[in-house]
Image (cartoon, helix red, strand yellow):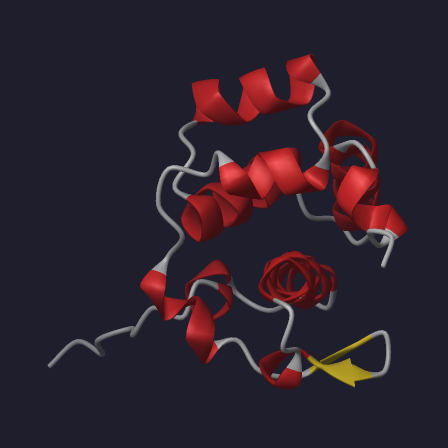
Length: 122
């Protein structure tokens, strides 16, 4: 069975679309980078290398330093499919990222997007 087209698409080409989507909604490239780094474990240098090398999505996720264990808390629908029900691991990782960028564009706070608990002051 041939690979899905998204697996061989360069991460850099989609990254640009993520940034454009965020900026159209008055969010920043830095927030997009923060989300990607949270999910994948890349630091800013590693993320920039992936973009410059024009690696495909499969390579981008294969080379990710440490996938965040809290990504399993990401729930919801992307492209009409519930991300938590996607069985193919690479497609699920890609859709997790899509979902996080969607949440950013919809105005969710970074703390909520990154599944961080905010402790209220006493």
